[in-house]
Image 1 (tube, helix red, strand yellow):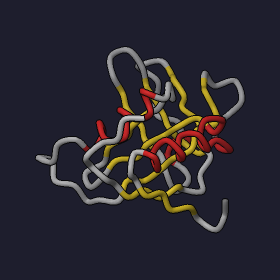
Image 2 (cartoon, helix red, strand yellow):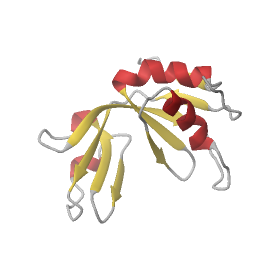
Image 3 (tube, helix red, strand yellow):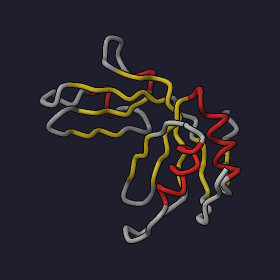
Image 4 (tube, rainbow, N blue to C red):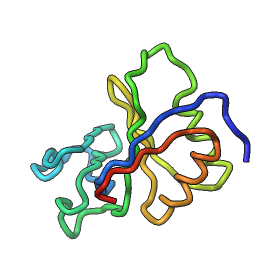
Length: 135
C-alpha cells in the first residue's frame, strides 16, 4: 500500500445516506433538505441529492447505503492535496468513493459495504479515523 505524505484526521459520522438523481428541471423536493446532512447539486444533466437514506422516498432513482467521513478542517482554498491524500489509497485498494466539499472542509462518502476496508486502508495510509459511540 502506498502511503501519502499528507496525514489527515477524519470522523465517521453516524449517518446513513442515499445518493439520488432527479431530472435536471425537477423542483428540489422537501425531503432533500431535511435531516442534519444533505447536499443538492443541479447541473444541465441532473439534479443530484445526497440525503438521509431514511428520508429518500421509494421509487426515487437512488443508491442507498453510503457512509460519510468528515475531514477535520477548515482548509484554505489554496491548500493542495487534501482530496488526493484520501482518493489515492482508496483507488489503489479499488474502493469507490464520492467527495463532497464545503467552504470549510471535505466529506468522504464510501459504500457501507466498503466501510471497514476503507477505514483500514486510510489508517494504513497514515490517516486518523475517529468513530462515534453510535457505531
